[in-house]
Image (cartoon, one colour):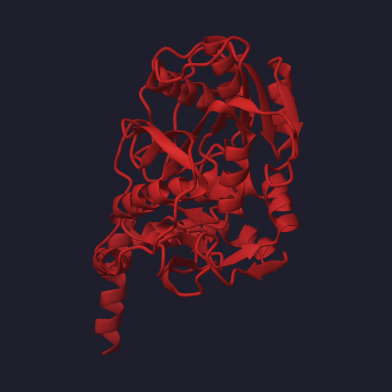
Length: 377
């Protein structure tokens, strides 16, 4: 589970002390919230503010431009080469184009790093880049633990009663980071948990909690073991082979096993932020919506037992179990057209917002520019 700054504050008051932190509140921080996680829920980002954030990211983006990249020729789910361009560049200013498949409606990055490039990105660049974008200090392992504890407590409350696990159940947290989610599940449900994550430092932190920790990506992870519970929290957007990952997870479940997966609904986060250009980012290879996620799960043989929309929007959680894979029909042309129209409408509104001042400093800049034009005319 990557500590992702797209996630908003969740009200969790009963968080225990973590390390030296005596008054830790678990938060999902968001660059659009007032005070960056202080409790404000406004996430709309002004075009001027986006330019400022990109300026902070520019030196790091220049380093990323030296890394090898690849172009994605077709949709991972349906194989179609038909698509609509919905955003470029990404929010950091990196020249990555986000497209929507015109056959199935999946949003995905057409321009990506290679597998080795992403391994280097997460090891050396990811947290620096997100820190530059938000204007906050770079998060450390204590911040990650704090964030994870809050998320885990909320998730446990949501899943209580829905999870019926046998004694000694085996669980694996894919993208489990510092291990607090797996640890909280182990304490509450009595499972024996494993954490799989590509960040060695975070896996080491998970081991310090007494968990089994494996360093590596899920795409390259191989095991014959089957699991009663797979947690795939705040990570699905980061994988490179969406269909392959979900199919593999289904295969790793025991007959009565369960998979929990949550998504950031792309249409909802775009509505909240104002424009996809302020949302899309190099580390999110895919974006799902509730409608698309439902069809994806069914097509790979995963049946929805429970949908959780009580999480802070735009987060939606799904509790899934095995079923027979179903036929993957094309999305309705009306659905595709409506989504494109909606993105166009938001783009127009966002451009109109850019003609207004973001704050007092921006107002003075606008006034000075108009005065300069008047004097030169």
